[in-house]
Length: 433
Image (cartoon, rainbow, N blue to C red; front, side, top):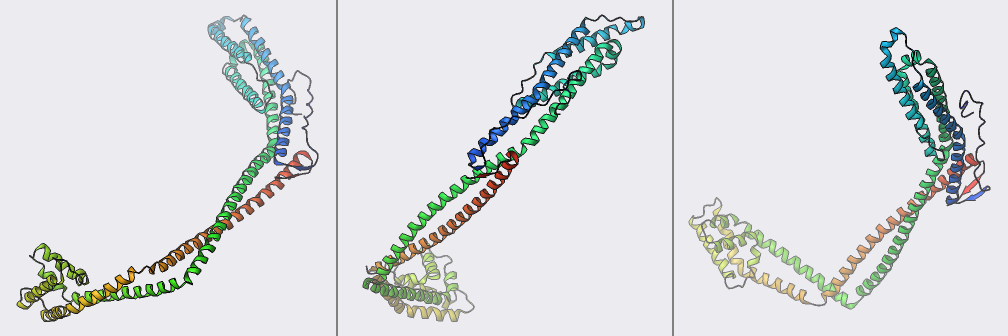
């Protein structure tokens, strides 16, 4: 029996029959149906728990009423003290008042009606608190109570013993309830997990659909761009433009080689140019820096204050300074040879620079070059589309795997719910999404 004896002086109470929940016949249930069934099972169990705890509450209320009656009797009783006991009279009266006050305070508090699981837990906590306070008051004054108020102390002990027995029965009933509902609680949690996973799978499916639409758009654009590129590459305009572009590339390469050649020539006289820069004007220092860092740039100079003649005169001055010893160098003879070679080569170098620059200018001015640029732009966009398409396809594959994995997890959890329902109801259900 769940409660044993509600009070030792009462006849045994029979256990109320469990409340049966409404259950559908075996078959297929949706997740919502399962949630409703679990709610029905929970409601029926709470009703059964309430019915099982109602007698305990009634018995506890009767015990509290008895304790209130004991308090009244204790308050009215006139203590008869022997001569030697009279010296403890004030202490005994104080003890009596304290116990009476505690009994009335606890006995006057209302016990909660048990209609929900929360009510049942509050009822248990109320009894625990009440018994604890009764124990504190009676325990600290047990000697005086047992000696001077023996009859009342015995009655209190009996009632408190009954309350403790009731509390044990209440705890046992709630513990049994919690154990029995645990599978249903786990099942409800599993349903929540299933709903979350279904929602996650749906979101991934929508993302996969959007990704597929982007892939289709990219594939369409890619096909169009390749067709346009093929048409452009097969045109006479592109063939001429490609030939012109190749000539331009060759001319630009020739210019790079020419610049490197000129830089190499001036590298042999860099020390002389550097030492000559001491104490000269800022303009002369600037020109010396140009000759040291990018000498090819002066070969096409035609500006009024920055033409080739000014640089030629500057090189001649440097030559004189080295030759006269004003610029001391260990290999002055070799430097003088290089300076002389540069000066003699300047006219031809200037002609070569002008020729290359003119060739490049003509090639760059031609509109036919636009066809090659359009082809290059198209190739760049095609490459970007192909990279984007590869990323989107990889993402789509990942989304599909996620959806498949999540759906497999949902199927396994649905089977788990089905097995739990069988253990709870004895009926075999197939749980659908």
